[in-house]
Length: 399
Image (tube, rainbow, N blue to C red; front, side, top):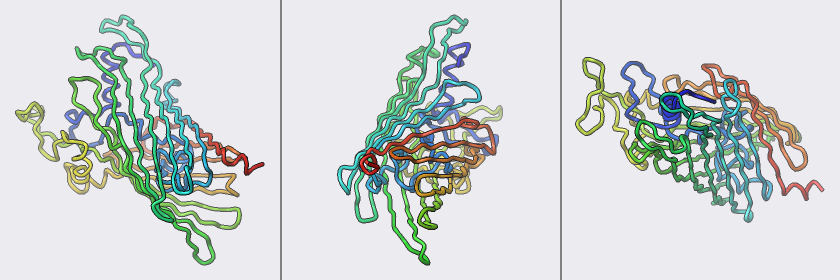
């Protein structure tokens, strides 16, 4: 992936991957999307969840639960395992951008487990040039996150987990942009999650009901220069449920849904003068006409983000994005999945169907997923994602 000037590169990267509250204004229309730094943290990393409409907070546990809800690990059947996932990104435009994900877990005993994961987002190769077009080298910008979690049963049907995460975002390789020396963006964050599951029986039909909640990426702001304002990372509130129905000895079907909301400031509406320019507020910022000042602490935003939309309750409800899916399983060896993801048109307008399948044999499971957009182009459209899971505990059982 190449561009002609460093200025264009820096502009595209900063606009696409960081959140600058002062640049947002919705005076002219109703579009007021929330953007953050390091959005790669919100990409569904595994194919199973990707086939179910990008959900997973309350689905049955597997090695990829680290991303969705680490509190599920104490309920996992096997003692230890790991998974590998690969997701092409913008494949219809370039062939060198992708997300890779490694995740693993180990049950310490029947009540607790530890887990870890590595998420790596490669943005391909960029050729850096100066303002007159002279080549000053090539670079491969990338972002990654490393995390570890501890989960434990808090009751027969209830568990909790805490995850700690280190985030590294290297977008410009220290290049000088607009007279400013750029740097690697770094942050630390934590997830807090709970999970509840209960076996039921309705008219002789066995069912498994589950509920999950995960507040993820509660962490420090990030900056790519000492002189730039620090930006929020995508702190997210996720809640959902699932219902697994045993049709007979070999056939089961699961219904699941997740509801999400970013816990970062909503861009306000800034006041404009007669010429259509922003009005300074005397404090080096712009005067706000509606909404709340986005210059808030992370702790403050966790609570005020529930009621800071400039157009009130109606806009606040638009900030919830929803995913849902259905999974059919035959003998826990063959899986067919489908789902749908919805985001309001004023908050990003992501709408797409998802499809997928999975095959389990002996010690491993191979999952695939495919995305079909319905509202606009999507970075993952026309691409096939895959995940490979291993259960080492199953080796002895299979023998």
